[in-house]
Amino acid sequence: MSFDWRALLELARTLQADEAANEASCRCAVSRAYYAALHVSRLHMRVDTRGEDSHAKVWTALKASNNPIERSAGMIGDRIKKARTEADYDGRVTINRRVALNAIDDATKVIEKVDQAKRSNTLN
Image 1 (cartoon, one colour):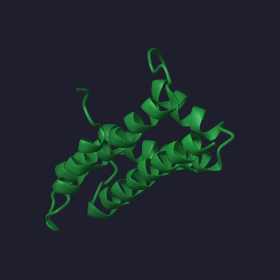
Image 2 (spheres, helix red, strand yellow):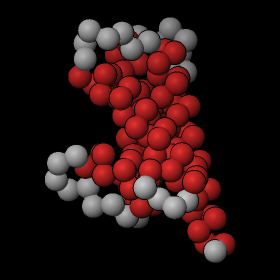
Image 3 (spheres, one colour):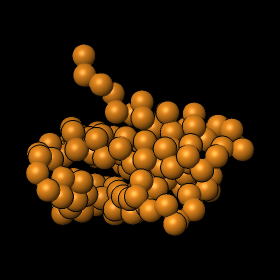
Image 4 (cartoon, helix red, strand yellow):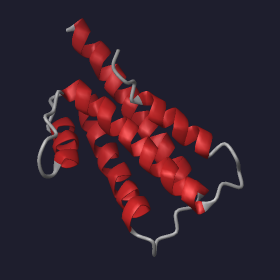
């Protein structure tokens, strides 16, 4: 059985369950939420993510879709990618609970949209 990438979103939620979450857990939550959305989207779009710009390939494929639900998911994915890059690489930027909760909300939206697109594709 393959790994369910949605489990990373649940981990992000767990990291933010405590209102007094420290910045390290906020940064981890942003990253985990992002990777949940990325991998669920990657599998849905069947994107080969080997090589450079692997993440951009996923979001670009969604944004280039004929399906408006997928295009919306791609735009949100780009937004989470920016937050994840700051959380993982920029120690000068403060990543607080609000930022983490926004990333979790955005990742949830991406996954919901991908699931919705799957359902609409199977109906056609």
